[in-house]
Structures are given as structure tokens and as C-alpha cells.
Image (tube, rainbow, N blue to C red; front, side):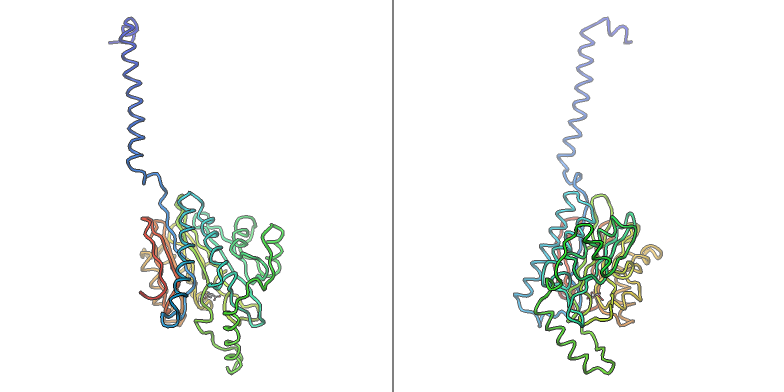
Length: 354
Ligand code: ASP
């Protein structure tokens, strides 16, 4: 029937229009039903991994209460970050908010609970990198910024630079409204005792410098995430090494060494003996092995941590994530405080080599 004939028969017009609208309605219904039947499709595929430092962390030297405390804070932090990602928050927001929980806990060597310098103060370092924009921000040797990772984010988002240090970084953070505190806010008894021990050992050492013991240093914190937009982001925050002096800066604020992110390979946050991580460009090397050698995340991270670093004598570990949400958390020390939630929602919280 042609259109002219159709309009000469009003009933047929009505039936045809009804049929068309029924078809349109049923098509949109089918669509809604399909989404309702598979709500998973609607939710972003997100994942997160965090660390609270690697070192001589032995079950034999930890009470059940201490172990429970570490696991509780790790669980709280990883679930908070995962929740933000599920809500659709950007990766950098999830990284910073997760790390802020760890910086606020006296258990970890970052923010409150940071190790002491030789002179009895705290000098904090932090960095963040976005794997999509390849933008990055870092602060080094800051003493009065309440949350160094917030300052790193500020540098990444608002400044034309990548790394700011010392009083300049503090002034920049102040001018941009970040919370300033007295350095003593970061004090803890446990870290003061570690400083006293380290200084006693340094007095005996021939060069007056002493040797860093793993258990006087561990506690650096970090997070790597895959967000709902498919970006991977890494961040790290630390007090560095006990009894450090002369303005020593470790790997944590150094992009490429302690933190790196590139959507086409991986995002990494490291913890360990910083001098080695800087010299071996650890975080970027893991990503480069994926990119140029076609290694899996697991193989790339394991090769660098358990082969390259072990041969060099650098102890520590990393957390790493790729754009598919795969997670790797290798370490070559006795333990590494760590936790993750993968793209299927599976939660892992661990300390020792299980
Ligand atoms: N990597 C940090 C530094 O060398 C310390 C640590 O991760 O334990 O400053």
C-alpha cells in the first residue's frame, strides 16, 4: 500500500501508527531490560593496589595486635579508594584520598609516623603521575605540609612544574590553601627510638654514616589504580630513611624511580632502598619492559624486583597495575604491607611472603 492510499483509510493510519509506537516502545523496553538484567555492564571496571612499605617485616617480631592494626588500616584505605573509583571518581582523586588515610596513620612512614632525620625532624617526599596525560607532580624535603601527596597533586594539576622542594614547595602549598602544620605533628615514639638506635650505630661506623637497617626505614606508602575512564594513576608518599641528612632525597618523589604511570604499559609505586631505585629507574623500567619487550605486568615487575634489584643489592618492592586492571605486588624483602581489590572485587590484604 502506498502512502496516499493509507491516508484515505483513517483506521489503517491509526493501526499503523499504533504498531510503530508499540515497536519503538518495545525497543526501548528491550534496551532497559537488557541493562537491568546485566547491571554489571553499567559499573566501571576499576581496580586498586596499595602498599605500606617493604623491609624486614617478620611475623616473629610482630604481636597479633600489631598485625591486626596494620591489616585494619590497609583494609580501610584500599576499600575507601575502591569505593571512590566505583563512584566514578578520577584515578588521581582515589590515589590521593587513599594515601591520605595512610599518611594519617602513625603505623606508616609517611605523614604522621614519618621517620626522623639525623637532626630530629621529618622531611617528607611525595609524587603522583597520571598515565593518560603523562602529567606528574612531586614535592621533596617538605616539613610543614600536612599531606605531602595533596601537595604533589597540586603541583601536577596547577603548576607548570613537576617537582618543587623545601621551603619553596611549602610556600606554594600555603599560597594554594593546603594545610600547614608544625613539624612535631609527625612525631611518634617508635620512630624516635629507631633514630636513637641508628645514631648509635652510626657513631660506631668508620665513615660516621652507618648502615640503614630495613626495619628502621619501612613504611613508605603508595597506591596505584585503574579508574572508570580507563586511566591508570600512581602515587607515593614517604618520610624517607631514618637518620638521613644533608637534604637526602630518595626515590619516592622521583618520577621514573619511585612512581611512574603510562596508560600504554603500567602504573607503579615503589618502596625500598631509594638509592637503588633511583639508579635502576625502577618504576619506569617495569613499564618499559612491558612496552618494548611485550612482557606481562607480572613478568616485568618480577624481573626488575627479584632479578635486577636483587643482583644490585637493592631491597624493596613495588605495587603495579595495568590498563586491564591486572595487579602485581612483588617484593624481595621479608615482607611488604600490601592490599588490593581487583576488577572482580576480590580483596587481598597481606604482610609477609605468604
Ligand atoms: N624508598 C624510600 C626512600 O628511600 C624509603 C622506603 O620506601 O622505605 O626514601
